[in-house]
Image (cartoon, rainbow, N blue to C red; front, side):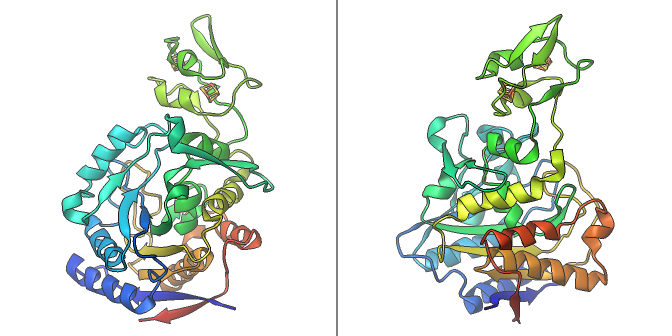
Amino acid sequence: MKSKVYFIPTKGSDSTAVINEKLKSLLDKSNVLDFITKGNKVAVKLHFGEEGNTGFVNPEHLRVICDEITGNGGSAFLSDANTLYRGRRLNSADHLKLAYEHGFTKKVTGVNLVIPDDTKKENVISIRINQKFIKEAKVARVFVDTEDLIVVSHFKGHILTGFGGALKNIGMGCATREGKLAQHCDAAPVVYSERCIGCGKCAKICPASAIVIKNKKSVVDNLKCIGCASCLAVCPTLAMFIDFNAGGKVQYKMAEYALAIMKGRKNKSGFINFAVKINKECDCWGLENPRIAPDVGILASNDLVSIDKASLDLVNKVCGKDIFKAVHPDQDGLRQLEYAQEIGLGNLDYELVEL
Ligand code: SF4
Ligand code: SF4
């Protein structure tokens, strides 16, 4: 049976107030938040945007979503996990500060912000999934322990996955730094020796004693490395390097990580995609990047695969071509959704209900 995806068109000229009215109407008519059980905590998974990027979802729209959750009896909070690469979202304190700077304050959204510190064991959970590429997923505990989950995603292009929507927001976004590294690469970090100043910070933090400093240069023992990515975070000269798309498996691994988060969440999750401000690259880019499509609108569904497929189809329709393939010719973004369907995450077949 086809899954329903509800859609309300928006225009680039729409004001925030107009978009908020449309969003409220979408949420009220679609009933995608009706699963929320009175008294339950509701994690709202979001990307707060890297410093210098403005593609992230407008915090004022989050107010509408969180008010709806509250109206359904849920207790919402916004959350995201820290990043693998260096930037303002690498650790919880900086990440939180940046999110506030981007407007995600309680005054604007009406709810608290939780950025779990994944260097603390109690904030991390390993979930055994025994899939083809990932046997055990390392994710932020908050997305597993919280009863209900709403995933709010900005739909846009992505250098490694062609496009990024709800699947990427969950699969990559809920993973700890170790989990993100596992998705991105098969190997231990390598060292750009010309950049290495031999400071020893990487060796000091390495929990596996996999790094030694020889001749004032860092050397990584691949057999000892457990892929925690801690060394990447502390290196002051960016001398640690990861092949972020090793083997081209990132889309499959990302889907398997999403499976870990969605385990036991049947009828306990909802998805909202903003197909607006559609940039070539994701919100992790610390700079503005070109718009590749006009604004399309907002989508809502309880099917993770359907909402991304519908977003993809709507954007491509308005562009008159596969715009994501055009700007990222080396990536076939549809693979992530086909594989997600294969492992039981949702349905590629959907019924679009335009409001
Ligand atoms: S990724 Fe972790 S285990 Fe591997 S070398 Fe770096 S700090 Fe050590
Ligand atoms: S932290 Fe970076 S610069 Fe310092 S020793 Fe390690 S790789 Fe070299």
